Length: 167
View 1 (cartoon, one colour):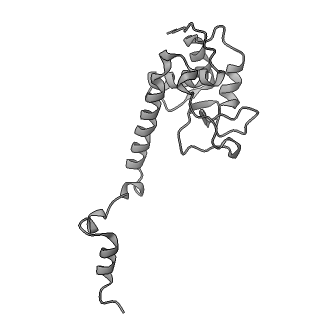
View 2 (cartoon, helix red, strand yellow):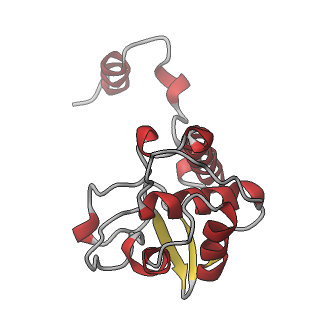
View 3 (cartoon, one colour):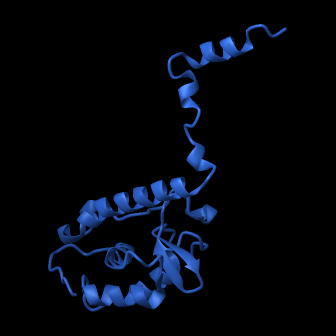
């Protein structure tokens, strides 16, 4: 499924890795993560930059991986879910301290127009997974419960009413 893009834009290796991983997630929503080889193969199949640049492999293994020490790349585009497995990084995933505030997604202007829809897809994907996690966590599912106890009065008035008659 090659969608070779011919333009003057030279895409960053990290951005190319992010695009390939995002495409894998979209094409295989049933899979939680992908092997390093899956990501490298998807980069090759997409053919954004041809020939495939030698830095692709090391970016998938190290430079883009949030929970690995930076060496020297410090992106947070991928997460190592287990040995040799990767998925896109999401807020709340473990992150090496030296990668705090590092780049998570490509900037729209840095990637070919044909792939910019992936940025909106990624935001929706993260939001859907966050909402799903909230619903499945029994403690987080309690968020907002009890709100109706003082919905018709200010919280301070509610507490004051409960304390009436206390010494």
